[in-house]
Length: 231
Image (cartoon, rainbow, N blue to C red; front, side):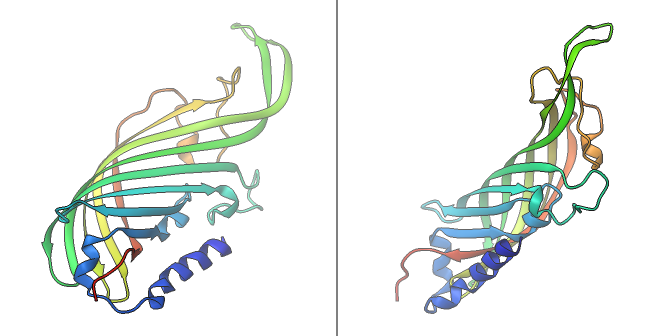
């Protein structure tokens, strides 16, 4: 976790290494971004992204990708009952933006976004083999069992992006949408088990299907503009 924080701080200071630019030029260039709040999510990820403008730079596409593991999750404690879970998360976002209002140092936008998240929880459990439907198993194995949670979501977002003369940007946004989580056991012959994670969404109905539920999105990103600028 400390290394990630140091990376974010270094990323924020990166702009000081460049000469001053015209902030209006930034909207014509690719912007590399880091999303700090991803590290404070329960399904924590170290999230990076890139915003790429179209020839008409009122339109852009932004792609994010992130990975996280429970070993650097601030919400789990090794002293908790059952200890820290062995959980890893992959999260991606694909976003299409339209900037409808702009000033020299800032632009406002609306966006449509697709989110995919994959969370895998690993536990060592006793698993019955050759079990009869009426009960009873031939023998039991103590082995690793993998549980998966998969989330697909659509959001409509609105936000402001600010451009600075040292190539840095800041993007503030919020949005609403719908998400559908699905759950399944990934280890063969362990379909009757469910994870022991203390967080409630793991201990609900354990099935292949999932309900569509409301989704709230908010946050910010810090970016650095890439490329050569006209002097």
